[in-house]
Length: 333
Image (cartoon, rainbow, N blue to C red; front, side, top):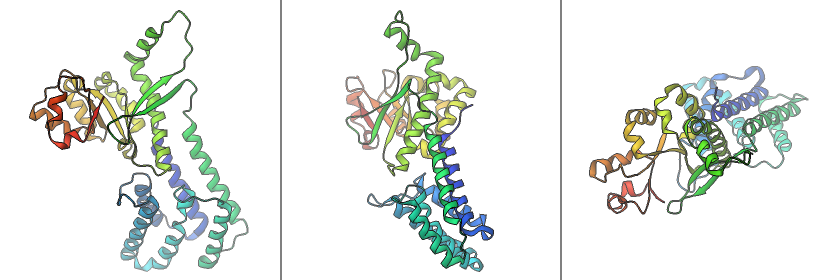
C-alpha cells in the first residue's frame, strides 16, 4: 500500500497549528475558525494558489490572505469579533513554526508569544512556554522523520537541467546495487528498465521526488518543474496505476511534476491519458516518428505541459514553425 507524503506532511502541519492554538486558547479554542484560517494558510503556503507578482514573497502572500480571512470572518460572525481579533494576532506566529519566517531562537519567540498571551487573554500558565516549545519541536521532528523515511543508499535521483528552458529538470532514478560479476552492465540495465521492474521502480522515484518537491516548497521555491519517468504499461493496469500514482496525487505535487510519455504510446492509450489529465496529472510528450506536424496535432500539443523534441528528428523544422503557444513549452534535446 502506497502513501502520499505531501498529504501526510500537510496533515502534520494542520496538527501543529491546532496544537498551538489549543495551547494558546485552551477552553476557548474554536475549531470553526481554526479550520477557516488553516485552509487559507495551507492553500497559500503549500499549494501556492494565490500567486502575487514576481517580487511578492510567500510571507507577504500568506499575511495578505490571512487578512482577507480575518475580514471575511468578522463580516460573517461580528458577534465573535473579539475572539477573531485575538486569533488573528496569534495565528500570524504560525509562520515562525512552519519555516516561512526564519527564527533564530524559537524559545525566545515563544516567550514573546507568552507575554502577548498574558496581555490579550490574561492567561499565565507556569508551564506554557515549555509545553509549547516541546509540542512544536516534536511535530517538526515528526515532519522530518516523514521526509527521511524513504531515504535509501541503493537508489538516488539524478536531476539535471534542460539547456533551452529555465527551471525545468530531467529526473532519472539511479541505483547502486551490488550484482554478481557474471551479470553484464547491459543485462542489469535491461532488467532495471523493462517490464514489472520498470513499473515498480516508479514507486521509489515518486517517493523521492515527492520529498524533493516538499523540500523545495519548505524553502519557498515554487518555480522548479520536474519531468519524471513513466511506464506506459501501467495504462492498461487500473489497480496498479492507481496505487503508484497515489504517491503523487496531490495538487502541490502535480503542479510541479510531469510524467514523460512517447507520442506512440499516447496514441495507443489516449482515453487513459485524458482521464489522468482530468485527475490533475500532467504529461510531457516525447515526439517520435509517429507524430505528424499538421495543424490538428499541433493544437493537441497544447494540452501537454511540455513537448520534448529531438533537434535531429524529421519533425523538428515543421514543429518549430507553429505558433508560440506550443513553442514556449518545447524542450529541445
